[in-house]
Amino acid sequence: MKKIFLFLAAAMVISVFSSCKEEKVKKLNNIIVPPHEEVVPDTIIHQMNETESTDDVQWLNTTYRVHVHRYTNDSLTYITDNNGRKYRNNIISVKITRPDGSVFFDRKLTKAIFEKHADQAYLDKSVILGMVYNDNDSECLHFIGSVGSPDVLSEEFVPYEITISRMGEVGIKKVDLDAVENVPVDTTSV
Image (cartoon, rainbow, N blue to C red; front, side):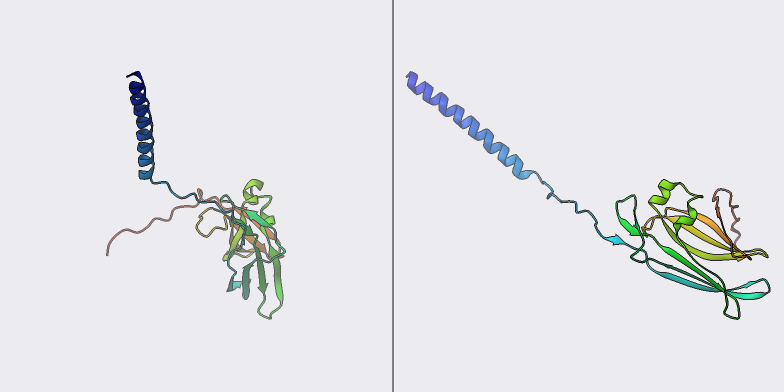
């Protein structure tokens, strides 16, 4: 009888272990496990699109032609943005000609012109984004330029006023967006 009791006890232990094992398998089969996705680093060096603009500007009693061209080339270094993507730095070519076609100003600008006006850590992750003609006075042509993230989905940038004097000297001043006056919007209905 002892043998039968031991045999039954062993059979019960085996059945308990096998039923627990089956239960675990059933539970595991009901769990949705997402597939393992391997993160592949972005090894492409991206670049911004090439842009050009030409404006005829009345300045110093005559018409000057202002041509601004943004581009990159393979000789430029690259930056790594906050998302780990690599981008080529940009060059901004500014050419200003007189009515007779002679060149008043012709210079290629890179973000290096902002080194005295911006934090180096910010410049290391930024590119010169662009430059557009804005206005003029009797002494200077005024442009708005910016340095920031090259990602087209990003809105991160720092604006600068860039001036070109009558003598061809370039001046740079950071634009304080907090100091810009808010223009009141006329909300009266007609």
